[in-house]
Structures are given as structure tokens and as C-alpha cells.
Image 1 (cartoon, one colour):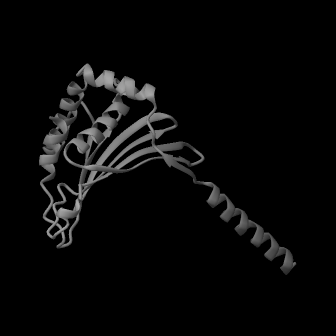
Image 2 (cartoon, helix red, strand yellow):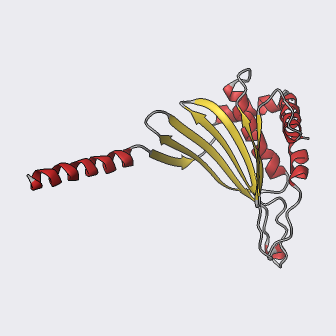
Image 3 (tube, rainbow, N blue to C red):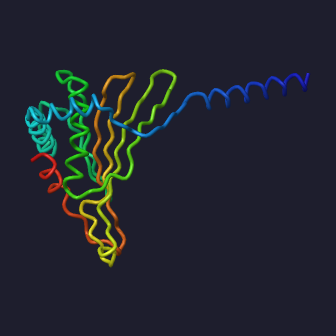
Length: 199
């Protein structure tokens, strides 16, 4: 009887552990844009339609700071050593246009002097839904002649994520994480970064 009890208990624990491992299945790969995407993106840029969206996002950001309602749902991310915002996907926007906004935020960051150091797509099967996260990670340019402390960190390291749930766009998150040790100059104000991104 004791052996039966422990055998059943062992099987239950083993199955529980096995099921727990199966709850999250992750696949990660490089984020590479194809020719068709690039052509559509540059056509969208040349049409200058993006400026209306950028104006709406910036307006929503400042209204959120003042605790006012805005057309776009923008969420503030304010922590001691990181600042950022998240943009919820607006239903009146196409999924491709929202993806282009994600791409544009990366390009605008590069234009500010940042270097793209990583571009990935992470797909996670959470059993009840599948989450896909496209991510760009950028760092301030650190040339050999600039490595004498204090080093200019600009606005800190930049992380930009575009999250999809079951192949439907969910939100874009933009975060600047600061270097806090004495090797680096104080980061530039995040409000200044917002102005640079959207103008």
C-alpha cells in the first residue's frame, strides 16, 4: 500500500513538473526585414502620413503626464533608472502601419546617434495564446576616443519592443535605461528624447 501511495505521488509530481515545463515554449531568432517590407516601409515614409500618428502619440504622451484623456492609449513607464512609454494598438490603425511606427522609432533613435546592437524575434507559446515580441536594442556610440570617463551615455541604452498576441498587434514599448556609475555622464533628460523622437 505504501509503495502504491509513493508511486502515485511520484507520478503526480513528475507530471506536474512536466506540464509546468510545457506551459512556456520559446523560440528566438534574428529579426530580419525582407525586401517587400522595406519597400512598403519606405513608401509609407515618403507619403509623410506617419507624422499625423507621431503627433497623436506625442500629444497622448504629454496628456498622460497631465493625467488627461487622449485619442491614443499611452502608458508611462517611470522607474528610478529607466524611463519609457508603451503605446496600445489603436483599432483604427492597420497592423502594418503600427509595425512601421515600431520601425520608425528604431530609425529615429539611430538618427540620434545610437547604434543598433541586437534585433530579435521571440515567439512564446503560452498554451492559451502565442506571444511574439520583436525587439530592437540600441546603445550610445562608444568610440575609443570617447572612452575616457566620464563617458557620454546620451539617454542611456534603448530597448524597443513590439508585442503581438495570436498574430494581432498589442503594444509597442520604448524604454531608456540609464547607466548610473561614475564612468558615465548624467543621462540627458527623457523629455528631450521624446521631443527628438517625434519631431
